[in-house]
View 1 (cartoon, rainbow, N blue to C red):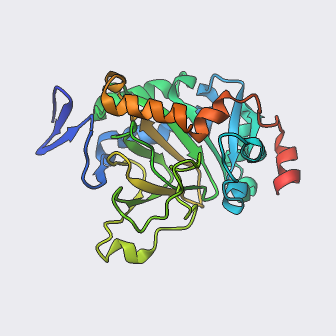
View 2: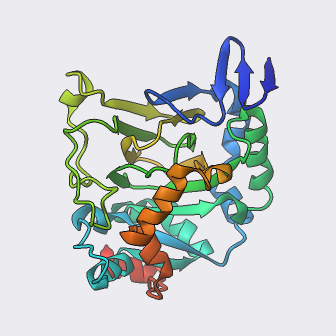
View 3: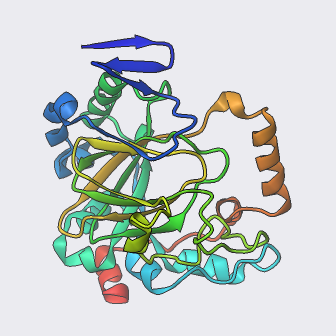
Length: 301
């Protein structure tokens, strides 16, 4: 039985704060029983039929594991833009799903982040029904994350304005390593570095000792129907299952009504003064090359 009141959803004796503005420790929920009948809908066929775009931008995870971020200075972006162009490829939609689902391409660790709005029927109604049942966020699910081959997202935090983003695994598995914002053991980049939200630890796993020695680190392994959220500026590293295609849905983590609050204004001023990686990459005219699966295999295989 569920009942909704304001920003919360009551499930039995538990209350989920859909806003999740402050979470002292990562919060895990197992909702498999609530959405189990919808999980099989996230098939390769459904993805192909539902996607309405002409192309997909694939991250070549193999290169991002081997090559750490280049020097990133706001007045010299040449190395950064070259790295970005080298580690991504634009592939036609049908061929992109071929690459992600073909086991022979898993050594490339292909990964894609796609807006939920890019999907129509039959998958879009399924996503909307999941949101209705879980009622985690008034804005609904925003992104679909899909990849294979054990792709790793380096240790980082999402900045001041991203918090309470729920991540729901609908296929495959993901491992999240979290470290509290106040932990001084995490190496940090200087404030002028455009990659300052990423730790110099890069793709290295969080040391096992940090999970039990009082550091406050948390490791969470999620399967289909399980989800997690965390507080603002928590460090996190994410690794997907090597053996299968993993698909995750996430809410947006931003709140439009916060844009005029002091924290948001300070964040926007900081981006103006120092910049962020995404800010410069999105404003550049350097685009990843358009490739076929054959070209991907010959270049990176």
